[in-house]
Length: 285
Image 1: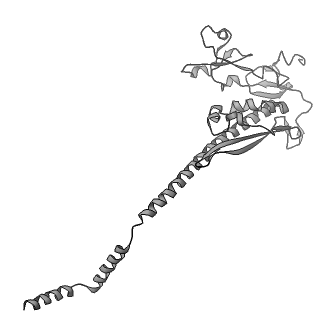
Image 2 (image 1 turned 30 degrees about the horizontal axis):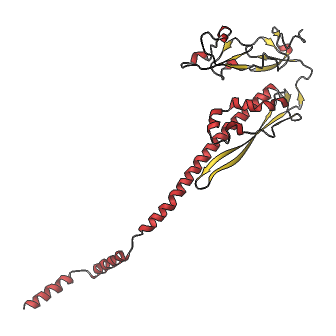
Image 3 (image 1 turned 120 degrees about the horizontal axis):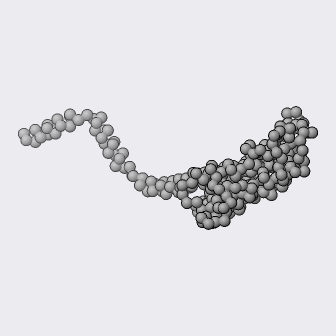
């Protein structure tokens, strides 16, 4: 009797279980019991992905630095070309290209950048003035240093070229010069003197630096502070800029008092203005 009841209780218990449920549970256990965890493959993937990621980030950073250097040199070439075209120095101005580039470029940044040898590494071979086209062709060749992991430092060459037409008063639409028989003089925006030569020393400022900042410095007796730039100085001034023709000292090389905006006009348009005692003495009328 006891064995019969026990057998019936066993059969009634399994009779309540769904056969589909039993099949799903057994298949789930079989699948996950036989599966193996890919622990080793994760380590290999990380070992390959991390160096690749670092290599890409270093490449992006290097490209950004080289683009900044390229932009800075381009700014220097454009500024130098405009100054040469305005002063009409023609072929002689090519020999002054290096000094003009240092004036328009941020030399401190370029010397600390990836530019090989700093600004001294820029070569201006091929720069010229075309007399027929009356255009300046300023060319700059240089190299940037890029460090690549596991390879080392490599040199990437670059070159830039800027074309600038000289300001000669030539009318390119009509193809003729404007008033070829007219006599032209040069004047400044604020000056009241006419100059017959663009190379007059009154127009070509010779800027000098004074580093002796003592109260008894000899230059303090000859020069007075510039009202434009000295009023903005709040810290200690270590050097000032003066000119041979001026009577004021400047604390900033970018001060407008150290620049000359020269305008060429017909002599008949400058009535009431006196001629320069240096360059206009021979043609004064």
